[in-house]
Amino acid sequence: MIGSELFFTALPCWTIVFIFGYLAGTMPFGLIITQLAGTADIRAIGSGNIGATNVLRTGRKDLAAATLVCDALKGTAAVLVASRFGGHSLAMAAGLGAFLGHLFPVWLKFKGGKGVATFIGLLIAFAWPVALGFCAIWLIVAAATRYSSLSALIASAAAPAMLWALGYPSEARLFAALALLLWVMHRANIARLMAGTEGRIGAAPEQSNAT
Image (cartoon, rainbow, N blue to C red; front, side, top):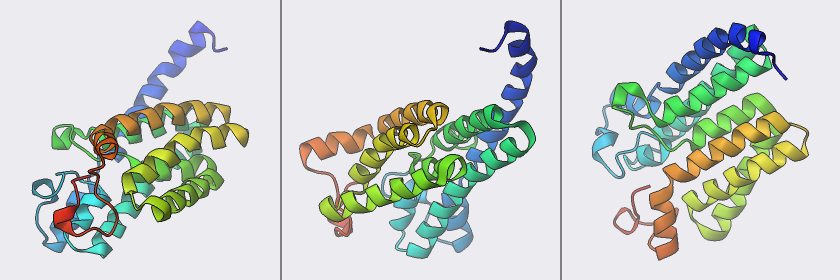
């Protein structure tokens, strides 16, 4: 256990790294990429979300894919930089900051994405085999149900268990908290899933709900 003196010595470092991670997470790639491409403002279409799912509603799969990759890699980069210069505990602080930055970016009045891509990016940095497991679960559930939101919810819930099973207890605790936040951000999707009104993958735009 960390002694009180060591804790207060390390606290400024954790704070700095957390802020670094948060600022990295706030980069709204969905908004930047679509504006550079000259498409409609994604905040004014669909769910108004800045994530890849809403970018897809512009009709540009390439932009949605680019958003997904960039939103993931900003989390990966924040963790790897913090790990390189500060070690594991600071990497954890950077990862938490990056996730919260994506969900609640100060530049967009704290209205960000729902966290799936950044969740994957953080898994890549901490335990890439679990990131592969997340993607495999997502694909299996999506193929069976055609619900993107349900796929992400189930995969995120499984991630902490996979981390624990592979010998990453501290990461398992972190991702349990991140998964809970991800579920909270998907509360409207969960309500629609329970009501049977959630839009399915491949559904016509007029038949699909905002996610």
